[in-house]
Amino acid sequence: MSQAYDLVVIGAGPGGYVAAARASALGLKTALVEKDSALGGTCLHRGCIPTKALLHAADVYGELKDASKMGIVAEGVRVEWDKVQKYKARIVSTNAGGVQHLMKSRKIDVFQGMGRLKNPKEVEVENTEGKKTSLTAAHVLLAVGSTPRALPFAPFSNPRILSSDSILELGEIPGSLTIIGGGVIGIEFASIFTRFGTQVTILEALPRILAPADPDCSKELVTQLEAQGVKFHTEVQVSDIKVKGKTVKTTFARTNGETAIVDSDYVLVSVGRAPLTSGIGLENTKATLEKGFVAVNGYMQTQEPSLYAIGDCVNTPWLAHIASAEAVIAVEHMAKKKVTPINYDHTPSCVYSDPPVAWSGLSEEEAKKRGYQVKIGRFDMMRSGKAGILGKKRGFVKFVTDAKYGEILGVHIIGPQATELLAEPAFAMQMEATIDDIANTIHAHPTLYESIYEAALVATDRAVHG
Image (tube, rainbow, N blue to C red):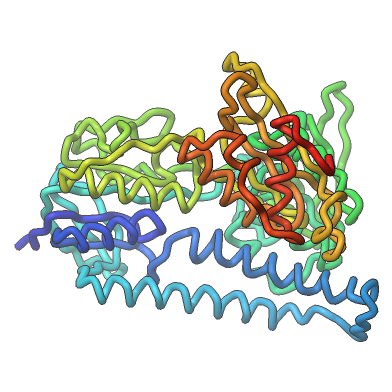
């Protein structure tokens, strides 16, 4: 006999559990289905949270090693990797417990097992023991997420060939690591391990790393990571990976046809993620797939009116905060609330490397492609008093604006606390504030965030320190 709900959510990541919580708050009887034993999804268990815990540990280690420059001598600083891993696990466990408590407090029924659509309004849940439970609902929301892509010649079954999942569980700090892919995930792991003493080599197929970021940010990041010892090879194609004992030999070709081999203890394959849309019963609905992604409208609704999809299984930015925002839109649309589709141009994107990179809106080149008469306002961190105090004077804030109206088209930041500094200009863009509005707002001194103000002054021809 089926259990009846207003909404059944498949997947308990930052999209799924947020959808369930919002639905419950709106008075909808809600069930949440999750295949893993704990709630939170990839972001919490294999992505955002554990990687940022490791990055923070690397930040602290780096600060202690450099403290002598300020007259603070910390002798015998070392990394105890097993304790770093325990710290990471503790952070993950605490957050997972928080999600579990949230579901309980919102009176959401949680079902552990694989969820599959029997029809547009029925979900069958099969647990690890093979027991099946049938759930019916007025609406179903898919938040099934994604999984790391593998290379056909480099199976993750080999312990020396790592995915972004398995690298988190390494029992040692590698002496050397080859990373295939210079996107956000690859760069963050490079930033973690190079500071822990690993020799890191990055192989990237495109002309530059961090392709979605502004080219100036990519260039500056390469400069700073190279200074830390990271080696880069761009515009290369990896053709073979062979494991011989404790050595991984990665063969790659340059654009001129020359081939080269890099040896390392491990290789991390970081070439994107694939949506988990097969085997979930979509064929039993009117929903369609486009290149493996569930096709949706601006309200996250599929061609099956009662079926919605959000997060990594749809072709929108693969970010936890985007999944959460899409969750709210989908649920409120189900509840017949007035909702506004997301403007994905305003997506805040963050790379938690050292130095961190953050951006929102259009890059300079994209703005020009769209026909804008572009005006740039850039302020270098070397002129920031607070950045100098912190000993982190490399980087900049760059505004991309429309010269005619002062519209903020994009902002790109690299330097200390870039991921936090992004908040003000991202909010300004959402509120349709102009660059003059930021330039007319007094910013405290000495702070890092006054660099936002200084860049705005440059963009409005009122520069003082620029």
